[in-house]
Image (cartoon, rainbow, N blue to C red; front, side, top):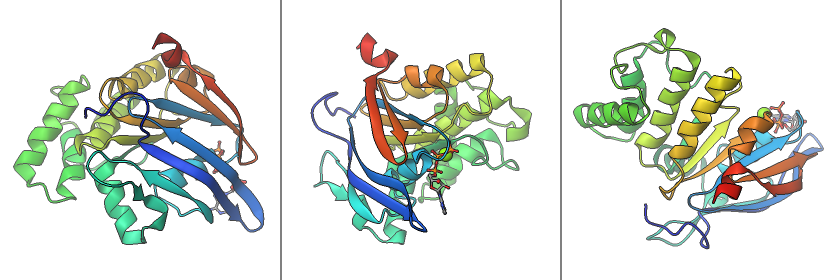
Length: 241
Ligand SMILES: Nc1ncnc2c1ncn2[C@@H]1O[C@H](COP(=O)(O)OP(=O)(O)OP(=O)(O)O)[C@@H](O)[C@H]1O
Ligand SMILES: [Mg+2]
């Protein structure tokens, strides 16, 4: 977690192209995300935001172009060259995800949801539960580990999702409309928590959002239109730095 906050990239995409039935969803997108950086992706509905996030995170393979993950101790990993199994393992170990809703398991408690991220990758249950309790406490949810997801507010549930995304030690966090179901005050709280897990930690965040208030929390904002980047500007976090 000591990588420099500038210079070396953490994730780099080159000329990503993805076409569905003849219509390009991504028509050549390149970007670099550095440790400590938060990047918001904006754009109209259908402009390619989710497709971009899914290509960056190894959820779907692009038709062309490449994504590389840079790590401290190893040569860059070419995400786009991995097979399905290797991409799943990479997502479990090195990437964290926060989506609008639906990724937490309602039948499980907050603590179990977070611990599961570690147990899926072989951490024994007692250690996983301890790490989950710590991660929840870091996000202001001490004492809520035993509650089921349905017994939490929307903002609290998103903080559980953030805890789960980071408990594995993942350095690259991806979020798709993480505040899409929240009111503006709760959105600000969730964004603040999300950014706190990135700033000064060597992690980085790519967050898709329709909400310019949410985007402004980030260091950089790119805007997509018809699958290409049409704007690339500093956000509030960028100005503060
Ligand atoms: N699995 C798919 N099959 C076919 N077309 C798809 C698929 N996924 C996305 N598309 C198309 O690709 C384009 C980009 O979609 P994408 O989901 O990336 O947009 P978006 O910017 O995330 O939109 P929204 O803001 O509505 O979530 C759209 O025209 C969409 O219909
Ligand atoms: Mg989308």
